[in-house]
Amino acid sequence: QVQLVESGGGLVETGGSLRLSCAASGSIFSINTMGWFRQAPGKQRELVAVVTSGGSTNYADSVKGRFTLSRDNVENTVSLQMNSLKPEDTAVYYCNVVVVVTTRVKKAYWGQGTQVTVSS
Image (cartoon, one colour):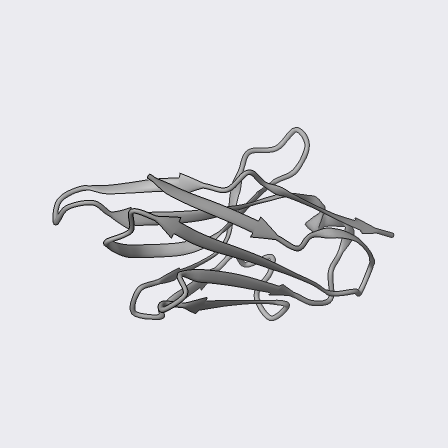
């Protein structure tokens, strides 16, 4: 089993910054991707940013230039630095980690979610 512990989040004014962190622990042989998704009230969960084991990063268009994702392959952590926050960034943010179980099997794990609220 893999456990994800999230930290960060909270309430911030428009234009402010927050940093989210996620640490993975447990039976980890190898991690494929690490990243963050978010879900606003009444909307589907959407990708915010994801990074591969090789360091390639993909961002949602809505956060490009404002959010930065970083990954530590030794500590198995992933962090999301969020700058220039907007009210539309308000959502519950979920850490996502895809673990390599075997050469053919991967399994996704989710954090418990952390609330980010941006006031206008």
